[in-house]
Image (cartoon, rainbow, N blue to C red; front, side):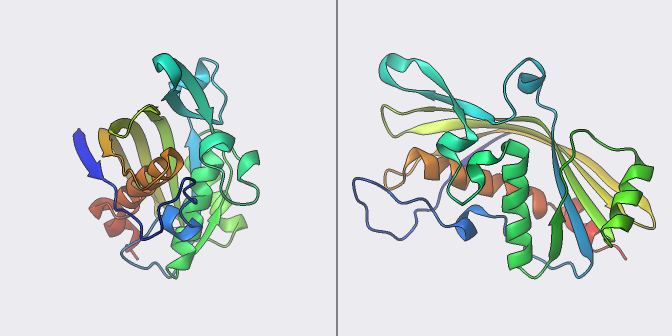
Length: 218
């Protein structure tokens, strides 16, 4: 699925050095509340990583003469204390959990290297006194942008969304795969344009109608 994202320009003075957007502006914004305790996990299953890329790899930037350079979390996403030590999955978890909790949820991150069996999921929820669990499995999460001019860049994602309930097991298994064409804002840095594209994707996942339906399941 191809869709086009126009990033909303933030109200700020445009200077030679653009400040990073705030943590809140980077974080997921759910359009509903869940009162139950929820576990959040992002699991990196990208083929690029399986083939040797580091788990901190996020995409490529085309700099002088169009030569592509690998970008990692610490180079483009790190804006908060501790971000430089995070891999991509941990970074996305942090933006999900912060956004959910800022909206009144009770969410906790759990680091997982692979998709667990359902009995292991139940055990995790019991250990953490949680009633629900949302796992995002990253099959792809990749951007390619050009630093030589402001135009648009491709942001490819392929994410399996798994939602579990303590009493009823797996409630949802859904895939969202698409290429977003992200219109860059001249008033923003490449870093901010990527961070805002990430937020838009996390918002789409959290506010998906099927995710919302099962998260409201009681």
